[in-house]
Amino acid sequence: MRTDIKQAMHMEAAKSFCTAEANENERRWDRERFDQKNQDPTNHYDITRQHLNFEIGPDGKMHPLGYQEKSLDVRLAERLNQLGWHSFKKGSKNQPNMCAKFIFGGNHDHTLQMAFGNQTVCTDKDADNSHLHRCPEIERWAMDVYDWCVRRYGRENIIGFQVHLDESSPHIHALIVPVGNRKSGRECVMWSAKFGKNKYEYGRILKDMHTSLYEEVGSKYGLDRGDSIDGRQVQHLGKRDYIRKLNKDIRQSEKAIKGLKTMLEKLEKQIVERQEQLMSLDIKLNNGKINLQEYEEVKNGLKWQITELQNKVYDKTAALGRKESELKKLTNEVDAVSSVIQPFRNHKVEFDPPRITEKPPLFGVDKWLDKQNDQIAKHFTSIVRKIESLYMEDAKRQVQAAQKNVLADYNELNRLHRDYESLSDSSHQKDSVYRLLLDQLCIPSLRARVLAITDALIGGRPIPTSGGGGGGSSSDLRWDGRNPNEEGDSYRRRCLLQASKMVCGSIVKRKR
Image 1 (cartoon, rainbow, N blue to C red):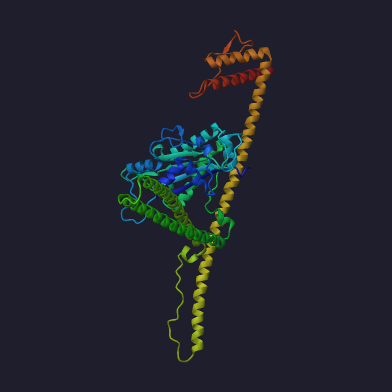
Image 2 (image 1 turned 90 degrees about the vertical axis):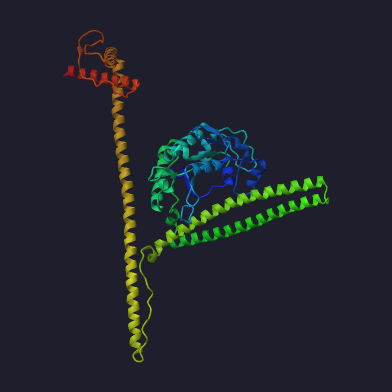
């Protein structure tokens, strides 16, 4: 079985969506902006493949990327206004999730094959791939993914659906607003309606999404079911090692966030300085300390610098948002995993550290100490046994869950074996039927009888039973006729096979 050609689906909850991110999804960039983005070694935007990008619009049809007059963030704001969304719920300090950001993809080589076929794609930076053309298979795949999203979330809630073929691997960005119904029946933004009320419902829904995407889309294009990343590292690392790794990632994220905030402060300070220089420049012009030509040159230069600094602010703000989201996810994951190895928190074991409240006596201090030590020992022994019992129960549940999974896999294997045997038997039966029909058609007399009976069955007439197929007696043998939803070709084929069986049956009777 292939294990490397898999579909990929990543979904992220979003409390905000900035203009810079919208411009990136719709490629509202000029050549200079492409070059700026590619200065980051992790980015690879191929401007010679930009014309191959496309998107699927609200009409369900393919269009060039960025064809809509309103940008992605504006369209999102309009849909949120229609649904009466507010950035903060009444009486709450936490901002609710307003949209889901999906990325659909798959195995690198396989998706490249879907997009460009046997054409040679050079992935080096500054390579010229303008000779490439887009293959129909990637368009069909994107359309099927879009239809899958429509069925789950509604066409009006898919704000953007962009397909990028100008990066390392072809992929899809989908921006979707989760919509549910209040008790009054009014539609509103409701994350829990589509992705669950807690992490357990979310995990179950995410698993179902992977399965559904594979069954309805991925299997048609040779992509195996994708794996959920949740808990994957926990299986490869010990709990303590995994928590240590998560804490290291948290420290790195905190350091990155601190660095981004420092850079933002510097950029904003530089913007203020340039704006002050513009004001000072106007004063110099009014006082005649600078001529008009020099004034225009310096002013244009300062404005260009301010624009560049503002673009950097947008980029750093978007990066800061991603890092803060990543930090929150890591923190939640540490809490979740830590609860597994911290029985006091996980099982809510009440634990009060032992304290000596009695005053030592004037006489018999040794006996008093022995008594205190015995009480402390009994207290700790009781707690340890309780924790041990809880761990044993957890281990038992995990073993039962693993056994249940193995049993389910074994039942699935048995079902596949039965299906295979059933299909094999059916194939052998059909093979013998078709061989019999071919043998009959090779003999002129039998061929005439088979065709005559077939014509009678198709036309609903009495079935001739005499040899030769022309005149002769007829029979009123029962025939079920055509099914209401049966295609014409399928019905005629069934009549032919039925005629063959009837001729074969009459021959057997005569031999008897």
